[in-house]
Structures are given as C-alpha cells and as structure tokens.
Amino acid sequence: MTEKEIHDIVDRQRKYFQTGATLSADMRIAGLRRLYTAVSQRETEIREALKKDLGKSGFESYMCETGMVLEEISYMLKHIRSFSREKRRRTPLAQFHSRSYQKPSPYGVTLIMSPWNYPFMLTLSPLVDALAAGNTAVVKPSAYSPHTSGVILDILSQCFDPRYVAVVTGGRAENTCLLQEHFDYIFFTGSQSVGKEVMRKAAEHLTPITLELGGKSPCIVDKTANLKLAAKRIVFGKYLNCGQTCVAPDYVYCHRSVKDQLLKEVQNQIRKQYGSHPLDNPDYGKIINEKHFDRILGLIDEKKVIHGGSSDRKALRIEPTVLDNVSFSDPVMQEEIFGPIMPVLVFDSLEEVISKVNSMPHPLALYFFTSDKAAAKEITSRCGFGGGCINDTIIHLATTEMGFGGFGESGMGAYHGKTGFDTFTHYKSIVDKKTWLDLPMRYQPYRQLHEKMVRFFLK
Image (cartoon, rainbow, N blue to C red; front, side, top):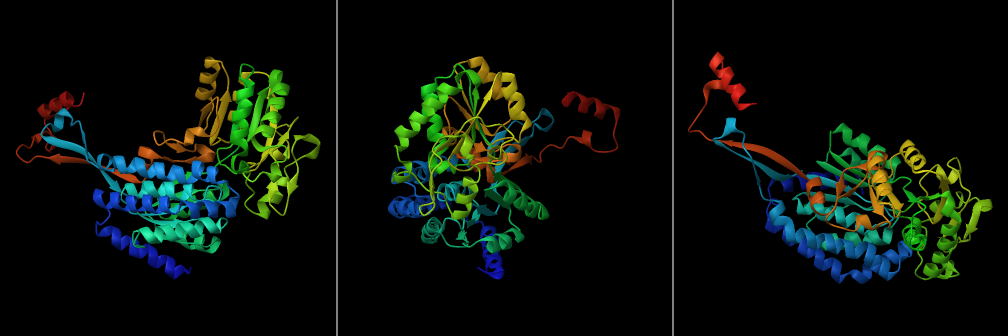
C-alpha cells in the first residue's frame, strides 16, 4: 500500500469521525454484533490460518485467540450503554448552583498495530475496546503471520465500512507510512525496540499511546511451593505457543533446596503434556519463521541442557528445553527468550530475589509459587512488574474484569474490559453553571469580605 493510499484512509476516517456517526451507543453495539457473528461463523478459517502461521492446535486457537475475542465482545455488548453515559460528580460547595459531570468521549482516529505471536486475539481485542469507546480504527496486523492477517482483512472488510475500520497489510514500509500520520491514539503490541520507535513517532504529534511490550518475566519458586503442581503450571505457561507468549515465564528462579526436585517434576510434566517425542506432537506448535528459529537455537548452551534441545528445521520446531546451572551472565539471560527454552537459576533468600528482580528491567509478568502468604505479599509489594499470578502462570490476562498491561520497560497503559474502554476514552470534566445566581467574590476588585468567603469555602 502506498503512502498516499494510507494518508487517504486516515483522512477519510477523520472526516467520518467528525460527522459524529460513531458516537451513538446503538451504532457501536451494531458493529460489535456484526463482528461477533463474523468471528463465530469463520472460526474454522481462523483456526486453519493460525495452524499455518504458528502450528496452533484447534483447541489452543480457540482457548487463546478466538474465544478470548468473543468474550471481549460479549463483555462490551453488555456494558457499552453504561460505560458511555455521563457520570455525575460531586460539586464543591462554592459551586453549589452547578452540575458537575464527566463525559466519556472517544479520542477519534486510532491506530492498532499488532504482533504475530497471537495475531488474531492481539489484533481484535484492542479493536473491540476502541470501537466500544466510539473511535474509528486503522488496523495493522503483522506481516509475519500472513494467513491470519488475511482472515482479519476479510472479516473486518465484511463487517465495517473502511471509513470506520480499515486494515492495512504489509511490512515495514507500511508501518513507516502509518507512523508518519497524525492519529488521535496509538495502541501498539510488540517488541521493545519497535515500541521505542512508535513512541518517538507518536511524540512528534503528541499522540497518546499504549505500549504492550514484554521482557524477562521471572517465575519464582520458593521452598514451600507445591512442586508437582508448580511444575505442571510452569510447563503449561512456558511452552504454550512454543514459548512465543509475551507473558510466558522467561526463566525459573528456584530456591536452591528444592531445585533438583523441581527439575525432576518439570521433566515429568514435559513428557506428560507433550509426549516423549514433542517434535512429532501434532498439537505442539512451531516457531514463526527461520530467523526466530535460528535466534532461539543460538540461546541453547548444549552443556547445560538437561531436557530437550533437539530441533526440526524443516518444521521450524524446537523441543521444550530445560537448562540447568544457568547464571545471570549467560547469553540466554541477556534478552527475552520468546521460545521454548527454560533456564533455571537458584537463590538462597527472598531478599536476594527481590533485589535481583528489581535490578533488572521491569518485566511484563511475575509468577510466584509458594505456600507462604507473607512471602507472597512481600514479593508482590516490593517487586515491580506489570501483572502476574500466585501459584499459576499466564491466566491473569484471561479476564475482562482486570486490566492487562506493562510497567516501565515492559510497556505502559492497559486494556481488557472496562480498562480497555477507558484506554480508548477521554473523560471530559464539565461544570454546567446555572445563570440565576452569580457570586461576586471571585471578581475584582477584591475585598476583605470576599477573601473571608473564599477561605470559608475552600478549607
């Protein structure tokens, strides 16, 4: 798509938004109902596209992508009318003859840039929030997941006028052109390096943004943890989508006294969940492309492999792999892994964990396995991270009742449910002043009596 074509898309959407067409709750509801129907009807196509792009099984495609989109739409359909109403606020005594309220207002023309690892869910979930809030949207899915991007294009073209929702496909050239445009809000999910560029471009127009990035999310296991259950849930979270999950446990940080037992349980769980030959498991996915395949293989130190380590270049598959005797100076600990490699490190005290985690860039997620409530409170209070779980992994993002987002280097802003509506909404604070009374005390010339009255009202 050319620079002019992209500019024309944004220009048409701005003109459409300025007509007020998207402000009606009925309009928003009708659009989301069409989207719900289209996604439901084309579930098979979505599943097949995800299989081609990432090797995802039908169950995983629904659980982690299609089902979550449908849930987000359902939530918004139930709440749009209440979310979009004006909210009365208390009026100060000094303005007693006024009505104070906040008016939820859409930003306008939004840009949603999504990644390849959960290409359907991470495109449509923020889109649902943007449309529920009354915005128009330009959607830019990843070029690395072309089959899913094609289905997204078909679905959104079927459901919406391009003045309302438009899809821009392509790669870096299209991304560059889009970021040169003036949007009213930008929502980006992806890597930190690209996120920095998005933020730089947004700053040129002072455009507000949400950045959903990633980082090295720690999975801490203390000596009181239920190791069998911990291993089961860690293996699920780590190797889901072949580790290509922004909130996957990046590394396991285990108390020295229970490390050997945990490793034994982890290996048992890998065999139970993925079989003795994971590379032949039809439900085990694949790495997105050869570039990432080679990058991940380069992080495997064969001398430290205690499980897995094999790969199939033709199928772009890497076995669920566990590394032992890893230190924070090893190459695998210098970047976000984003693949099926689990490094295991050890600690001796909770204070050591807190100090180490806080010395590193703030992660998108943190997981803590423990039976000690005081220790859980200490970790969640003192460590900086986006969100997480106690005694589980991943599941904190699978709810419309809590916002999901990063912190510091792992991003800014959040979405899902009401938080997602708020992300794409500007709340105008308005005072409706009555005309039948006009107190003189704020006007010059100021008098001593006026000052006493002001002091009385503003204490």
